[in-house]
Length: 231
Image (cartoon, helix red, strand yellow):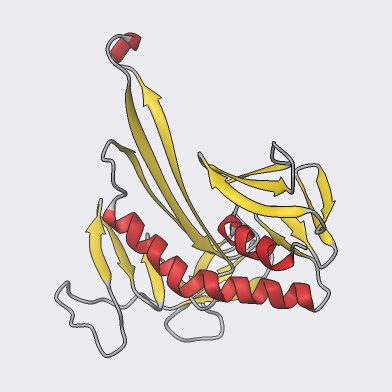
């Protein structure tokens, strides 16, 4: 067995355990629960998304997300990410008017990226001005049940003297390093989001000192982390 993937759990049971190519990890994927679309929500269940898209089951609630045979428990996920990217396109042979389409991407999973279990959900080439409902449902779950926990964990680790990596920026109590920029917390104004990127600003400076792409995992946590640590 050499390829990373889900395999029958060698410790027994009906679930599957993630083999990373060299060893069994602690990530266990129970068989996704099968509900009818008219399943009534129990007390405290919250909203439920359950449908079949392109022949693949999508199930999401306050506890987990299942897509393409993989289930990620929200209480255990180590990263989330979501992007909205607009593309300008012309008609065939570059003739005709220009139109804009939008790609929506959502991901959730474990580190290391592309090796540990993860879910990637995309809706591409859309021309509607509002975000697609399924993508927005997953983003709302992340904002409600995942991001507050991750934020608390990162801040606790920093307070304990550790260095953490968020959105490919290394952060500790003294300052941060990322994108070729190293800076202490003194003089930092904060982080803003504009046109698909996050920008770190220094007090009194006209231009940002660091640009961080929205594609980086957990990058949406940076504004709150920076606001807590800046001085």
